[in-house]
Amino acid sequence: MIKEKTETGISISLGKPHKTILFNDEIHSFEEVVSQVIKAIHCEVQKAYQITLQAHETGRAIVYIGGLEKCELVASILEEIRLGTKVEPA
Image 1 (cartoon, helix red, strand yellow):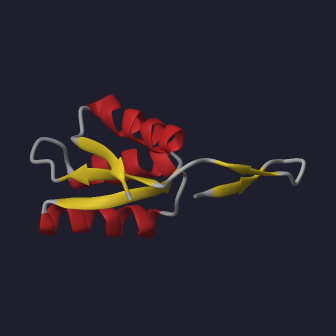
Image 2 (tube, helix red, strand yellow; image 1 turned 90 degrees about the vertical axis):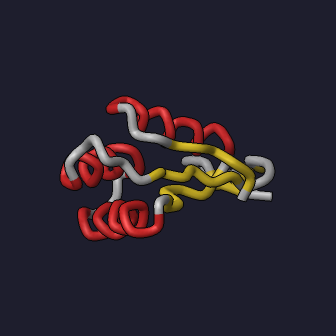
Image 3 (tube, helix red, strand yellow; image 1 turned 180 degrees about the vertical axis):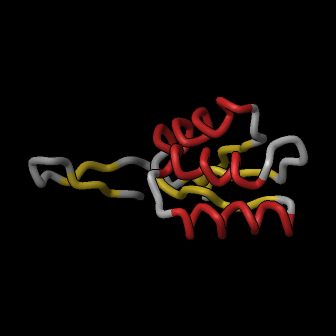
């Protein structure tokens, strides 16, 4: 079970963890994918670069692990530019 603290400090259960997977993309530039990863998970450029490089080299990379709703949100942001994603149990 994933637990997350709210702004008031109360812990809530988010259910079983899920992961958002990004698949390699041959259509977009490396920089476009890095930019979209930053937009999706609000991370530093270096982390987005590492995620993008892993997807490029291995065919897939885990972008985010957390509650189902957040994973689906991350996937939807990545899919705004038609990147291939999948959300599955972690």
